[in-house]
Image (cartoon, rainbow, N blue to C red; front, top):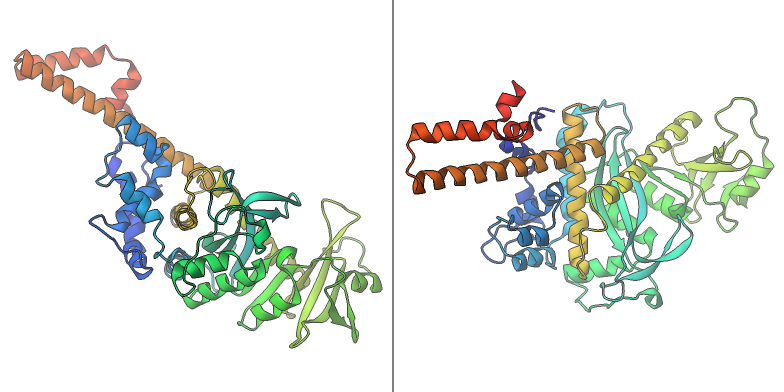
Length: 459
């Protein structure tokens, strides 16, 4: 990569990787637009930059202070006050940043004929200290089909099929007050803090529409909205279609959800049983046209395919774009898998779950927004430099780079201090000091000599 040198010879090049991202996308101005103002003398963008880059150092702020490697010009109280701010609109911030990246960078790299999509899904944000965490709840994890402690991280992302950009999210607590374990603080519902907590306690389909509305309000658009069966019902499908976007979603096999087919209201299982299936090497088993919705029904196409994990089972998809072929519906829905990779990357590499131990809901919201920004940074480095490595490989490359810089810098500081002491106490001449340095370095192991003089090792 051009922005991250592989010869480890220039520390500034690595710092510029983050600085260039901040300058190009005007992160400081976006923070200010979202009420991320400084209360005292420290700039919020410097606090944000430190939090974003901290993952690549491999040490928390606490450990940096304990080891004496913390060199920032602010205290931990200033840092935590920034995260706990009730005024910063993190939902709008990530939406604005994603819109800037998509509209000014990615769309110029993408063919106009390619279909862009919004992807909506949720993932468990588990917490072990739910009794003390604000709005910590017992939430249902539909992956394991059981209740767990924490939040459901409802996420909206944008993708062109190549690069996924997280747009915004909401840490959903339980909509039932009986399932909320942690404390519930009172805020005026007219304030941002009150609205944030009210959104956290709404049902997932309603919160999904709020995330979509925020994305559309900042100028971010897509041709299709993709989601799985957990959010799929005719009410949501017609509501999204009314906003000018088509839906491709997996259908929930529920007898209570009906579609208008052949003049009757039938469930998906009844529709499937009434029709003859395709055989042979066909990519799908069944394709029928239906009407979805009760008050304002819209035309839609249902495509049934065989379940690859269980050949005796079948899956059904619904698409509100009836001009789309069955093969294209299946292909476009396949882009939804990118958000599963995104969740895995955030949890395994970007420390989504383990890094923030704050009990404040505002701090947890800020932490999620910063992790999303880290992912955007890695995604853009990968896309703009045409790097063939995965995001995970880029992440570990950054960590190795930072570790190498820290080691080399520490060794140089020790050598400079040693030379200064010899010249001060023993009164050595420059010629004697040079001779001592050459002899001393010759006795060092090769890896230490290479760290002191990386340009010689490369040559």
